[in-house]
Image (cartoon, one colour):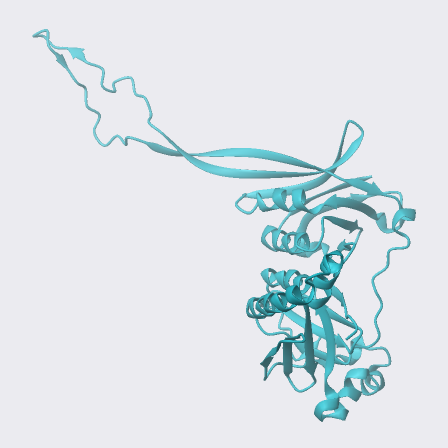
Length: 359
């Protein structure tokens, strides 16, 4: 079993691992001949399934195993992995490989850094007093001699993260969640703005919670978790609403003029006919107040999910009414020419699955 590669896009790689570390402690990494997959499935909260093409992150990619498609499954701790990869941001080059020490598996990250140091060269005639005929000492000056000379210094640093190599049977029952057809697709507004407002609403709900949970200390944690839910709604006409509602508070923010990307018939089963029969098409035909899709999410978990904003790119929210919210995070280069008005695929995509709570 072998895996090694040089990292060509350390910036995107660092942002991806950083966003994953906000949602869980452990990541399942699946490597094969064609793709790189990262999956985070916490005990509670949102799941992340990220798929990256090999060439979007790695160069000189070598992988070999006894399984089909040379698949290797690795379980790694996210915090040490993020810390190690983040240290490579200023490196001139970085590589990663699967190694073994004392019969235990490790992911080893090797970075090469160039630092500029200064030194003052020594010359045989530099400030050495020489006797003159009169017996006095004179200094021998060397004109135009620089005091210091810059010099590059290369430093190699290797960090090893302990991991587990998982057998095929260990991951056979891990599958990406399946959801029914989304009722509304909408491109989210700037995530930093959305995150700020969502966190403010979550905090506003807590005082009401504390007043209601007084005298019920045994259920306070469960009550806090349930009462800090946000209500997210969207329609197929470019409108998104985020709000919170308690017995003493009701407030919401609204965005108009957002983009509802059209379905690409090439990506929909049944082509043009499949698009016509799709749930989102039927939702658009309803119009009015019946064209809203709503989900209820836990406020703190939603705030962590919005940390994906550090990745950049576009984020498409897919609303399955009263069932689930799926975020598709597409990372593309500026020269790909992809049209935001059409739901297409990308070479780097992260899918966030957020279950909706009942009212």
